[in-house]
Amino acid sequence: MVIPVKTRDGGYDIVLERGALARIGELLAGTSETSNPERLSLIVTDDGVPEVYAETVAKAVRKCGRAEILTLPQGEENKTMASLSKILETLVKLRATRKDRLIAVGGGVVGDMTGLAAALYMRGIDWVNIPTTMLSQVDSSVGGKTAIDFAGVKNVVGAFYPPKLVVIDHDTLATLPKRQLANGIAEALKMSLTCDEELFSLFENEDPLAHADAIGERAILIKKRVVEEDERESGLRRVLNFGHTIGHGIELACGGTLLHGECVAIGMVAMSSEAVGKRLLPVLDKLELPHEALCDPDAVLALCAHDKKADGSRVTAVLCDEVGSFSFEPMDADALRGRIARVVKQ
Image (cartoon, rainbow, N blue to C red; front, side):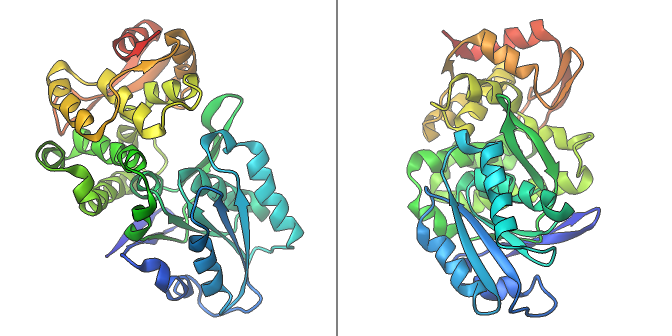
């Protein structure tokens, strides 16, 4: 399956195919007009990703060009300026030019940093995203958002910089533990609550983990529609932040004890009506996702003030009062404090 995504500068394809890594050479060749034996591909991965994934990509690239692998330490705590600098320094040491490219192989942390490095190096070089986790496949694979965390704030330094190609091989999910699968599916659940009541019914009535492929594809199609209408997040695209305003605050305040999707799940509970909550909580239980967090609510509130959706003293929150719909509501500190109190306990 190929999903084309339109952008203001053209667009890119998302290839969804089991076994796509085995065809990566053919797929990458389609992003270049001609084969160039001198073209360098720097493959960026981390030490939590099976080595065979990056090695498979490197082997394919070396049939028609040069390839090097850079392995970074895994984890959100390494989504930093230091890691970004390491990518850029490696490009300089390899004497990379504007004709060379970066290839991200891994989860959302790797993809975000690699994309930002591509946007910055020589004012922009090509990059290819190969997300290998459920979270990165349904979330960061679409939309061209790239970023690092900085000064204690998540994703505060970044750029909109679309990839040349996204390759999603669902076979890579076989190496993920159940917690990581549920962590990613939380992002698809978010999209179903705001945009697709039929998809939410699948979460309610079936085993979501047994339908990960179908859920992932439908989530990507939802995000594609939203991103094509609002590429730079000036309006509709804010709906994709459902659960994230408080979720991001919880993620940082908890010091990494909870995964991103787990924090988003808690954030969704905070921003849902009582009626939606009655349907949402059993789904979270099914996925073994939390309803609450144990951390400092004041710290969460302070982090929400740094949210990218903030406008002065208010933050534009996404609310879900009925499954399949949403609304935007500016919230001041008192309103946010009340929402946080629902889900954050000391």
